Amino acid sequence: MTPAALSRSRAPGWAAWLAAAALVLVWPWPVLANTPADRLIRVEGRRFEYAPGTVAVNTGDRVTLELVAADVVHGLHLDGYDLTLTAEPGQTARLTFVADQPGAFRFRCSITCGPLHPFMVGQLTVGTNAFFWRAAGLIGLAALAAVWGPQR
Amino acid sequence: MTPIHLELTQPPAVRAALQSRWPQWLAQAGLLAGFAFTIQIGLFGPAAGNANFAVIAVWIAWWTALKLVFIPFGGRAWCGLCPIPLPGEWLQRGALLGPAGRGWTLNRRWPRRLRGAWLQVGGFALIGLFSAVILTEPRVTAWVLLGLIALAMIASVVFERRAFCRYLCPIGGFTGLYARLAPLALRVKDPAVCAAHTEKVCYTGCAGGYGCPWGNFPAAVRDNAYCGLCFECLRSCPHDNLALSLRPFGRDVVARAGARLDEAWLALLMLGSVLVYTAVFLGPWGWLKTAAYSVGSPAWLGYAAGFVLINLGLLPALFGLAVRAGQALSGSRRPLRAAFAGQARSLAPLGLAAWVAFTIAFAFVKFPLVWAVFSDPLGLGWNLLGYSAAVIWPEISASSRLAQAAVLALGMFGAARVAVRTADQTREALPVIAFCLAAALALLWLLIG
Image 1 (cartoon, one colour):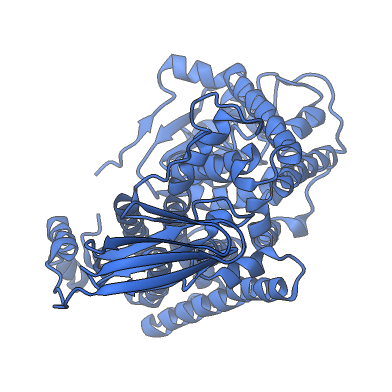
Image 2 (image 1 turned 135 degrees about the horizontal axis):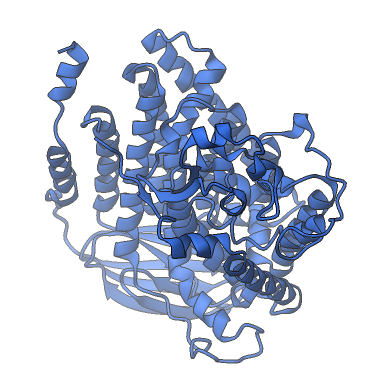
């Protein structure tokens, strides 16, 4: 047996790679201890962006989200939490929720506000975006499996 | 181990259905009618893109179906149904259905120096520069569709065969690049039969079928990239020597032979475009959206310069460096051009996965708009399907993110696999794999980071 063939014969089988992928996806993520706090987040909506476009809070925070429409009517629908706000021009709409689901969630304008309305988005990150790191690990593992996994 | 290979045209009924012109013709004619309707609504319907049938039907429904269904599973299956070349082809052939009459065409050969995918690279880059307007303005969408039909007609009356599809259509360039990954393939069953058959009617045409509209000699077709699944060869072959088959995904893409530089640039442009589109359309940067939309403004000029620089400068340079590094690591003596073109095959699985992940993030959440415009196609306030009144944002965050990550991981696996197989040694492939990994992680960050 050639050294290359010997090395291939010692390569982990697909079951091992799949088990590693499962571990990457479900391995318990360290949770940072933090005291839940009341947070006031003021987001200004103007065609076709939110300012700030990215917002971060800690898991468990009680978040009051204020939406101010700077030019025309804007909405804000928060994925993952299924919450919607609508603000008239120059006015402020607000709602309060507990950020109990960790991760990154898009919020998007829910009221047609112009040609780029479908792309008016922002992002709320609650705690650590563990799924991103797990997904990155999965992609890295896929590259390793392709090179050092069984070749057939 | 015998590779899995399932011949779909073995049942006589299936073969007969594909040999008959009617099913395909009816589908294409129906789609052409839909196309004409879409253009009309684009020109004269609601001004708001997300309420206009043309924008939603083309850029959400069709574009999603192309990337998620047609290409991954059917390769160029859409090209076999596409209505864009139909009017020009009718003129060129002087017939609506089978071979008959004399067409209106100069029947010139496509210029040798314009062969390859270079014009498609230019066309796709041009669309990229104006994408924010094309995607959101119904009238612009309609004019783009009209322009494509006009271009296809001009190509048909000046040149022979389907010059538009083969050399000009930017969507065709996109489709052909990724069609190599698809399991569906139309190939000759026994090359010896073709070699012995002197008439070559599959290329020249006969009473049963036109000569290959894509300019292929079917016995020489080795991959899906330039087979438009029009089934003319299936109709013209007197020996029934062609078969539509299913085989494993990605069979065509691992071949080193036939790798071309123009296709490598196309693959880099496709990968770069999806990164830029994700940043523009799904990122939180309003200034970037506005710049991409404000055609002609200084901000747009900056966006256009950035788009061209990233896609036709930075990415090819980085990829070239990766290929060169691989050669240095492995001591490979392959010419750099050949290594560049060969290793670029690895961009196909990653590129398709990137487009699928982008589409999942981009289109799934907007799918209620499809039901809404089909419920009110003219924008007159109708509610034919009961969807117009309430567009509900679907709650698909978790499943959508998981699907995006899984698709990107699959694409990365395919890219690394192809890189290893198209390299002289595994070591040669490692820098290219690192390039692909960086691109995949950058896209992941833009999508769910």
